[in-house]
Image (cartoon, rainbow, N blue to C red; front, side, top):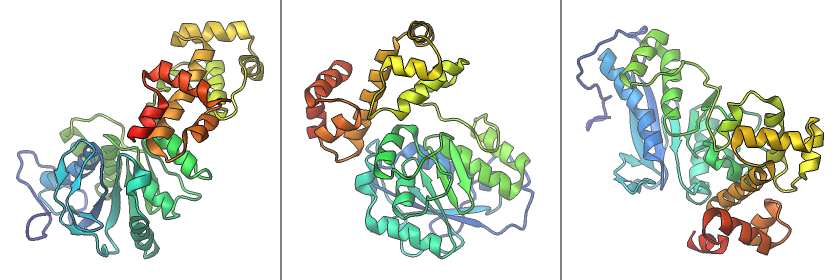
Length: 336
């Protein structure tokens, strides 16, 4: 928004006529949380700015807010001055929660209540990056399609065990919108713009962003296990899925092999050829990566994390964790 609260319409060389020139201005209220990811926020607001610039019309308006109206520091250390305290957003505004690091600590009860209230009064609500934690805390995600950044999904599942996020880059489910964060926030906004002004106009906005993705629901985030998803071996994918479902109570290599109908020797060969690791090492690394996520994203004790990741003793967990990450879990836990 400009200083006098009118929609920002920057000058630009390019012009593209929107489909609906009489469309009312769509408003967005960005609710910024401490340690929010600047990339996700910028990736969401810039397509709106570009849409106004291309059309030379007030298609979109936006403002920034925190719960108390005070400046907020992003995950990269930059401090942002917001427009105001949140107050009560207009019913036709979309309330967008921008979060980032340690959402379980920065997303307060008051913030979740504001999200719940806006949705209850008929408003649209969205969550970028870890913003869906706020929507979950507000009780809005039950029975909904939603997503969040793959890095934070293990912690999310621990906090909200009855909710299952998708692995897509973004989801739109009626008045609930979610994005995995990062540049995926652009994909979400492009979808909104396409619904408002048609695909031709949205494609032009996309071109201005120098981004090439298909408009519509994009099927994939790439996690640390993304290499597996790219492999066309159904047995390997099935085994990795089994591993992911049995982190707390690990299965033996013999059990895993038998469940997918492969011999242990064949499984060893497939993993080494495709991933350069024996399956047991891959499975252990998966459990340790999950432990590191729980260390950084929850208040669980080391004993609880050890058990949640399938280690029979805390000493075994500590030794394996130190070997993988070069530091003891107790030191990381104390630092956080």
